[in-house]
Image (cartoon, rainbow, N blue to C red; front, side):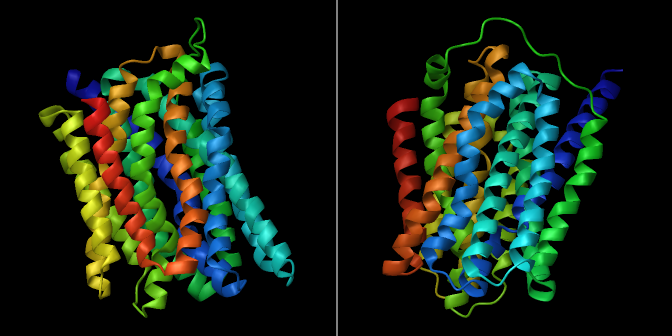
Length: 386
C-alpha cells in the first residue's frame, strides 16, 4: 500500500512538472534565437540584444511578489494556469514582430512586448507551480519538489535551444512564434486535470519579515544566476564571432549536465548537507565559466558549458530547502516568489550590463564576469551561511 501511495505521488509530481516543462519551452525555444534575431535580422547592437533577453526577467522580477500573493490568496492552480496562458500570448507577439512590418523599431517594440508578456507569464507559472507542488506534497518533500521543478525547467532549455535554432534557421522567426503559441495548450489541459490545493488561512506575514527569510539565500542565488544569464544571452554570438558551429548545443549540454546532476546527485543534499553542496557547486560553476572564457575551440567551450550546468544544478534546491523549513504555510507562495525573484534580478540586470561589456571588450570578458560572481557567491556562503 505504501509503495502504491509513493508511486501515485510520483505520478502527480511528474504530471505537474511535465506541464511545467512544456510551458517552459516557450522560454527555452527563443532563448538562443533572440540574440540572433535582434543582432542579425534587425541589425541592432549588443546592448539591445541584452535588453531584449534581460527585459523578460525584469518583467518576471517586478511581478514575482504579485504572483506569490496570488498563489497564497487566490490559489496556486489558478496562478499556474494564468501563467500558461500568458506564455502562449508571447508567441503571438513574436509572430507579429516577424510578420507585420519592415520598420525595425516597430519590430523590436513588438518583440519587447512579447518578452514582457512572457516575463509576466513565467512569474505566474513558476511561482504557482512551485507553490502548488509544495502544497500537494508538503515541506518534507521540498528538496525533491525543487529538484523535479528544476529538471523540468532545464530539460526545456536543453531541448528547446537546438529546436529553436533549427526552427529559426529553416523556417524563420515567425514560425518559432507559432510553435511557442501552440505548445502551452498541451500544458493547459494537463494542469486542468490536477487537484487544487486549499488556500491557507492565518495572518499574512509582513513583506519585511518575508524578506528577512529570503535575503541571504536569494542573494547567493542571484550571484549564481549571472553565470547562466551570460551563457544563455551571449553563447550564440560568442560562437558566431569565432566561426564555431552548433552554438545551440552549448545550452543543450548545459541543460543536460544540469539534469544529470539533479537526477543522480540530489541525494548529496542529505548526504553532505546543503552548505557543502552549495560550496562545491559554486566552485564547479566558476571553473566552467572560466573554461568558456579562455576557450580556443568549440569543444572546450562545450566542456565549460557542461561544467557550468553541473555547478548550477543543485544550488536552487539546496538554498530553497533551507528556506522552506523556516517559512509558515500561509506565506510559502510569497516566499517562493521572492526567492525566485533574486534570480530574476540577476537575469534582468546581466543582459544589458554585460552587453555593454561585450561592446567594449568582446564576449570573453562577459563569461569572466559570471565567473567572478560565482566567486563572490562562494565567499558569501562562507561569511554568512556558516
